[in-house]
Length: 464
Image (cartoon, rainbow, N blue to C red; front, side):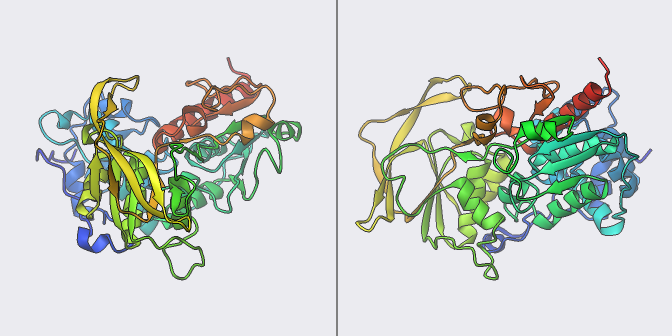
């Protein structure tokens, strides 16, 4: 047993300086050294009741992997993580650990929790750099399963089924696998080379991925079932953007966050070696207060713009991770809180020239538990901007529900599925992730994919 480190604070993570990183797309957090990783892992108390594990949607055996890391056995620590988590290098970077595993860490009661996410990232990066052994496919069990969507939910479901010997084919609409990990999360938070390495490991383990395959157009779910797939898992995410339906939203220079981020992350608009066009805005307003809004604002800053976040509630109600808000402020992004857009102003030629907002005050809590913002009459003001990015949420694309008979959806267009198993109203069809919940976190989508894989296996193998 490694000697405990009773320091009350986490080992700090080295980062690029704000005035340097807000001009490049390199990763902000630079990662631990081996010495830092050992020191931080030694802060784990190895609690017998393991509260951190109960906070992990994919059930990573956290005390065990931390104990191995504390001894410097990083390869073994990584192998312990991947027993239950197919994408550790991703989760270590983008999971909201503060509300999940670290939120339940006993060390957080009188100090800061153990840096579980930082250590998960370190172990995954270490393995990729030093070991990177290919995983041989499991012996075939003779059964076939189709997965729709190569995002976090689909990749997790496919990886878990492949481990059990299933012949798994993933159908992905885009020309690259990864879903939101590729098109939604910027390079400076999640390098795409890291995502590709994680996907390559799943392919090595036997997962087949068919790109440019739009299920609902090139093939339908009923056809997959007729072609010999014994079950289908739908993990198509929530890629349909929402707008406010205010005057001026059809002006040139108004983007959905999805389009803005996809052009930069998947299509590399920020890189002069690529031909992808992106509007060269000087001043950008990003509407919203979630992680997608922070990603859009920090991307616009790196493209050279002066950037404003416009959010109708206060900072305390912002759904974005505290770390992302902190980084955005450090990078020089200006926050206009308790403000809501009422109109986007345009030039005679049809381009954005400003956004009119009204100030808000917080009233009684609404259904989400957050205090409802109420307009302050007569408080209107105009922000001088030449581009607006709407980052106010997304919903599932209707293509699956519109082309699949017997698949129940709710009024938001989300597929109705069991939280425990992912089972839908349609026989042999399962679903999980944002396609079921609406826009949520990567790790919750992975947890849904994991649960569905287990349920599919039990159904096919005839277990009750």
